[in-house]
Length: 460
Length: 97
Image (tube, rainbow over all chains, first blue to last red; front, side):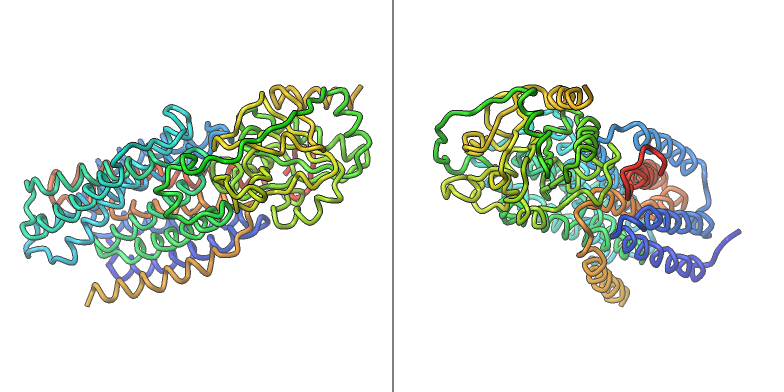
């Protein structure tokens, strides 16, 4: 069956509508799952009509590649632990970027071997799809390395970094111009462009510290959409442009939300190498440790308890015992909720996913702006592996690198328990005066074990 | 004219994208991101054409590799999003969805 180009494009319109509808439905927890399904149906439709179009004549390579990709993708999606979701998303982003790069590259062969000389417009779009695709692919790989802690999570900065980056950019522009002037398949300028695009992706992500990862992930997400968009221009496909720009826009919005939640500009996140900036006022004082027995007595008497999870909860895999403790507290008559900072964890919404996995209802999850006014009337706040997002220095200490960042004001609660492995500053390397406050008690040890001990006390 | 036409589509889609997504609650940020990520695998269409059009051997192989990566993105992205969304529940019940 050979579909005409009109019919194929008509089916693409339906696909585009399904993508739009799907994304809209992803905006509410009740309809989100169906929305994702709609979007998948749109994708399946687009793939099927493309395969049936008369431009495709041989299927061996397609069948092989599709089979391989399906097996890898499905296995990865099935087997990945919820705590490893950030690095999984980074890898999927990266493969999307690599696909766009390769489509641009293949389009180059078609254009140059074609009957008429390629137009400069087409060449520029091909270059863009190789450039953005390459940056997305190599940048995502580095992000994966940082998130999975296969490489250092700290910001990598060196003297002259900006100069090197500027030279790379100049090199990319230069080689693009040279390539457009004389587009041949063997052109060395093409290889320079390809290599520099991949290097740029690496250089763009290494100076970004672990705590800023939510921004990078959203930004790479946006890039993968823009790369698809550029590939759409290169091969003149409407659906690639529509779908790519939807993804590009959504990634930009998330990036913006993340930046706002850290009170920093995108430029600051991308170029500053966080933590090296200013020396914060040294915090002095004595911490007051508490043991599980005493913590239990306070919790038992509490009327309202708020949990504030952070990346440490993911590391300790403590989400299930936390949910259990929450249920026991509710049975005991306390009002229990979970306060989630927008940048807690390593990607947007990281904590929400983990708590959902542990069967906490999403109605119990409260956003920062809603919980803060309620905290002065909260009996106990339990901070689990969060640090910067509850650091009062962001409010009080003008010299602190995180000054101005909106935080969850846990120190306004009557009592604060901080679960912490040991003393030492958090991921951003900033001291936390919360630990020395009058109403703070430190519960040292592995978060999962500490919570389990409390659960055991409640049960006995 | 083609360039103008495609740019027109681009402009409208970007505005649409901003409108669609600006009010997603924080709870759904991760599924939204991975769901959108799966959509960005739409590049698979270009990859299929490159791999199957038999224009040149090199384009076929590049297209084939591209199909591989794009399919990982599509299949993995949709499945992992579905897996996450299946966990979002309304009431703290024992296990039944």
